[in-house]
Amino acid sequence: MPNDRIELVEALIAAIERGDVDVVRSLYSPSVIVWANFDGRERDRDASLSLLEWLISVTSERRYEIVRRIEIEGGVLQQHILHGTTTAGATFSMPACLVINIDNGVFVRIDEYLDPAAITAAATDPATT
Image (cartoon, rainbow, N blue to C red; front, side, top):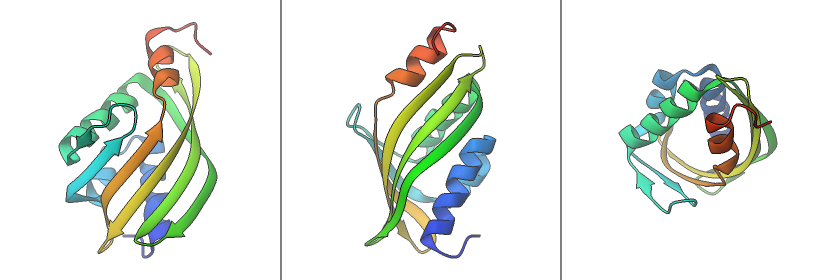
């Protein structure tokens, strides 16, 4: 298990890039809350992991371009661009920002700021690039 907050976030990102939902689950507190700006919903661990499983199922490749990753009080702020390729071969780039709260070596809350239109379009239209 990673030792510090930055290492925890690095482990999370690496697991998502590999499509390893079990590692993500191990990094989440059982009571984690994941909130997203695009729908204003708070998701529990199972709902968040289901959304992640969907992302993995519609993409054959995921790569995070880290723009900024800094420690903040209680966690980490990360700004990134998620680059991906859908299973149909379409590519997308989705800028995002995460505010991650960490307690006792696990994620307890993640606030996601992103526009899912890029991946939604790419996942439904193979001509999107």
